[in-house]
Image (cartoon, rainbow, N blue to C red; front, side):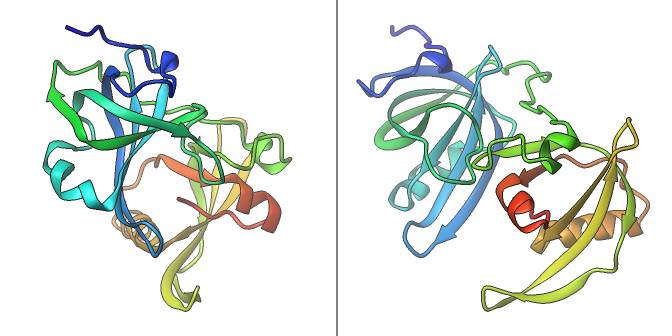
Length: 214
């Protein structure tokens, strides 16, 4: 039986890898070029994260086996260079599921493995961080504007502007879009909102002075 490989040791010279990971983020996305895909962020017992993707032709094959928060053993997959903007991890490669990829249940990895790594507000504001990567922030919402319906890329979407405050009393303005904007607005109005884990598109926030969220 093949041994479990640490995520940090994955290299693209073969496909017959075997890893044990927790799915800490999972979402489906649609693009004109790639169609509907499943995107995930995986983490192993060492706390190392890697992005994984299931292309449109394989979504039906794997959809029922993958869920956010579950731990899995994944065997036989491709590794391709991770490049471009909106990268969810610093790992140099991204996992691509194959038709021969196997997904097995396993013992749950610890709850403490969240992959949550909040960054300093000032590192976002002064442009210290690499603009190609999404980052985590946490704080208390201290200001919020009424939710708006605006036109973006030819479609109407919701927009919410808020300001976060951290334990140093530093402030971070941001803009939330789409369903995330409505979810946060509803939670604030319902007085059920305490804190929110948000992934920030640093590139847009720095270059355009607008905080856009993934």
